[in-house]
Image (cartoon, rainbow, N blue to C red; front, top):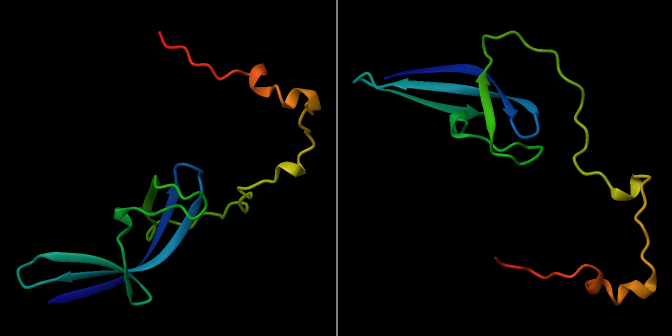
Length: 118
């Protein structure tokens, strides 16, 4: 039985928010006496799921993530730091229009929720 270990850099890209990140893993390929090859990935000698099974984006939680083995590719220049996802509404200069108090009781009459079916 032959066991081959090699460090691997894998780059993930979220197709939902465009976030890029890298993971440094160790690929373990084991070949048994019949010639069958089994491939697994480890991080710090702890087995982790294969990148082909999919990852969840750490930024937006999206499941539509592409991956690329960048072991033999040149390193790219890192991008600017990400913008925060959550922004507070109070930080914006836009204010909501105030509704006069005498309209609050009649709000359902101003915007009725009737449904008409054909």
